[in-house]
Image 1 (spheres, one colour):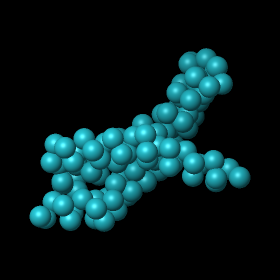
Image 2 (spheres, rainbow, N blue to C red):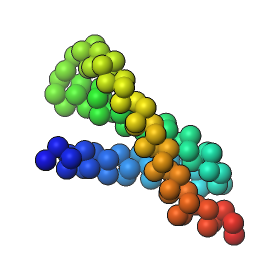
Image 3 (cartoon, one colour):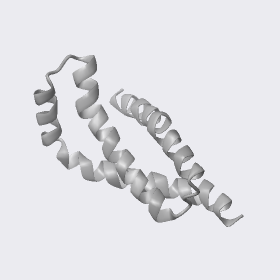
Image 4 (cartoon, rainbow, N blue to C red):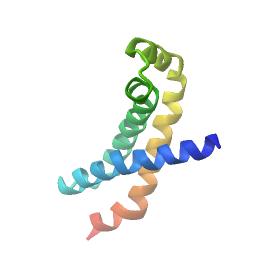
Length: 103
């Protein structure tokens, strides 16, 4: 059950953050793996912040200071979030972006 919730949140993050980021990078003609890796790291950290601070504050009416202190307790999750964002964006680059960059 908990893994299903995480999967849904990951898909939501990909659609709400990843697709606009891809469109922006494509529009600016950035096709470098390093640009996509850095973007993935930023997106990974942004999703972590969104899920641990922003959503509890807005949906559950948790006070911001309490939610932010929770983020401090979960800072250990920042490294896996950033690494998974880098890996996901790198795989995406290899599968999709590299082809239009070579043309």
